[in-house]
Amino acid sequence: MAPVELRQTATAGPGNPPHSLGSSIAHLRERWGWFAALGVAFILFGAFALGSLMSATVATVFVNGIMMMLGGAAEIAIGLRMKTWSRLILLCLAGALLIVAGIVCILDPVLASIVLTLCLGAGLCAAGMVRIYVASQMGHDTPWRIAILSGLVTFFLGVIILAHWPVNSVYVLGLFLAIDLIFYGAALLGLALQLRTRHQRG
Image 1 (cartoon, one colour):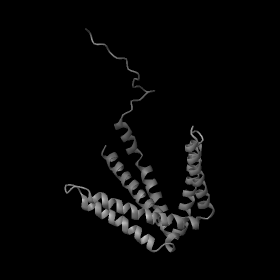
Image 2: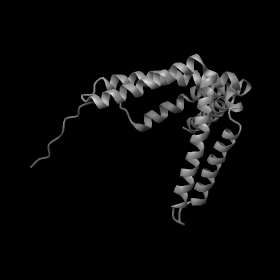
Image 3: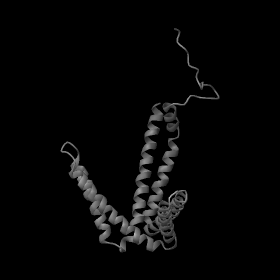
Image 4: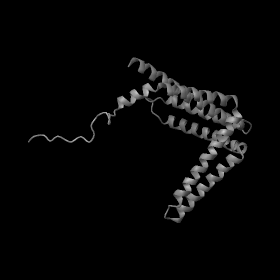
């Protein structure tokens, strides 16, 4: 029995070029300059945030407030589609609380930064304790020492934040934002340099 040839759904041509992982990577290598510019921009924004931690904190709280309001509105929309009263009331109540919290963040960012800094410190302490516990349950053939060290660093970072609360609430969130922007920008810049090197070799 002769083999049956399957009809191709798409053919490569001038109007329909073939798409592959290799061509996508090559396209990214050609655009390495955009990644470099974006990385430099993030680093500059992070440096600006370091120079004005209070403004960065206010900006962080303001953005969190907007996201809370959007999340609350989405949760209420989902709740209104529920067929049971219990889920409808629960989701709408949770969404309303998120919207109220977002409004507080926008109207009074200083008060919101105090609350968010307290939550951040408590969350870091809790996360550190969980990491330490999980690391203690790991086997001897796993990197449990590194996991415990990571948990200890996270825990003591939370302790330091809580020890200086609420005085540090005016700059802690801005400091975290600045560090995140700088590291993300450095990562993008490193990616751009790798793409540039491979593009020149290719």
